[in-house]
Image 1: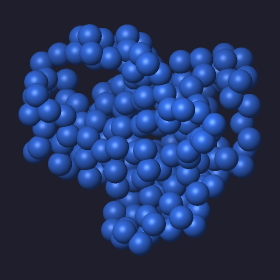
Image 2: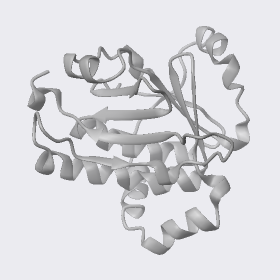
Image 3: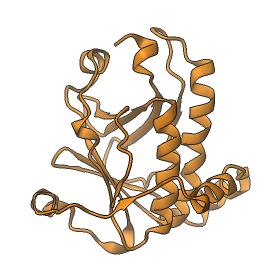
Image 4: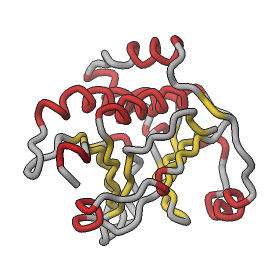
Length: 208
């Protein structure tokens, strides 16, 4: 599935050292991402594909980050999707189902998960570690593989940032952002963990 309204102000990049991913979005797209995470939570049998790699990177992003943007895929663990075959699958994809993120049910779910408590997050970290996101990069695409619980718990990270970003960010000096690392699975077999951050970035405000 792909959204009816493309997120044309969203850029996903990777630091040159690898395993460090950033999602840059303006206020409107951050709201859209929160709603997409809500749809992903309910779409246990579907794959949500955002062709954000088509969005041309701004001069700021090219100079300060990796020079090429990534697509994004959200899906559930139980699908056991063959990520290694994504290049072939993507090339053979026809127009998928177009989804609307403006339905009343989506808005209601977003509002519901904007008021989670510290105890809710502790349960995710301690009681449901298997629900957390697995992150993989293949063929210029960032895969976030999770569960209904973790997708719902992440909604507030995008919606909150859409509200605080314009107020706290200082163009040219500081971007308001949220670290999403606590939602990720940890791999004790590697020396360096994967990092994921969402960053408020308005091209007009930064002038590039």
